Amino acid sequence: MSTDLQHRPAARPDKRPKAPLAPWRSNIGLKIAMAVSGILMILFIIAHMAGNLHIFEGRESMNDYAHGLRTLGEPLLPHESILWILRIGLIASIAVHIWSGLVLSRRAHHARPVRYAHRHKNRGESRGAYGVMRWGGIVIFLFVVWHLLDLTWRTVNPVKEVPDAYGAVVATFSPERWPVTVFYLLALTALGFHLRHGIWSAVQTIAGPTTKWRKRTQATALAVALIIVLGFAIVPLSVTFGLVK
Image (tube, rainbow, N blue to C red):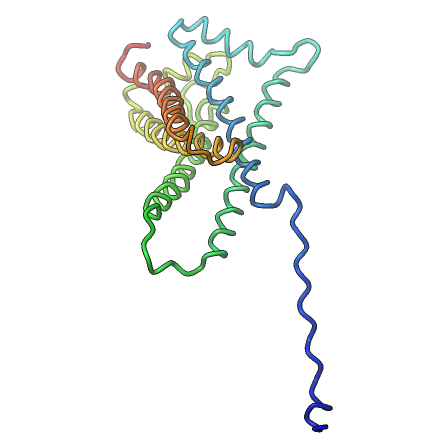
């Protein structure tokens, strides 16, 4: 027997397979978390849009609505308790949504680090959708920060009196502050594209990729996005053009 064989080092054992990720950390789990958190945010957005429309009923009605949100649950619960529960829930949904999206994006990048040489018919569409969701999400995030500073905490709003929600809205969208209105409309445009793609993706994640309902789902997503965008846009436009004073 050859001495080479006798002294040949033993083959290294194969690496142990990685333990499977917990369900909530898997790609499917993250997609479901992203879809559910997105749906919760959409419900909040719709409720917020409906509340904004009280401005067309006049100062008293708008301020009564805002006061009702702050005193909801009293006297059983402290002042603004329900409102803060809603805010914390919204912040948690946003955090889950962003975290899930970042992890999924990073995993997709590592799984396919080199671009394919050949063209795929859906490649341009997928990259376009990714760009819309990424940059649209950044614009929406910046707007949320401004919105909190402007109409929630009144840091940058001319009206400091908390009970006067009507006056704060009229002041922030006054003709003299037209850049704020432009930024608001830009953020709404980004929100519309984000909602259109996000609603469709959420349905695909929860219900499964079926071609039977594809066109109907896309049409529904577009309709919901348009309703929300127009419902929000009508308030600043009405104030800027003097229909609400």
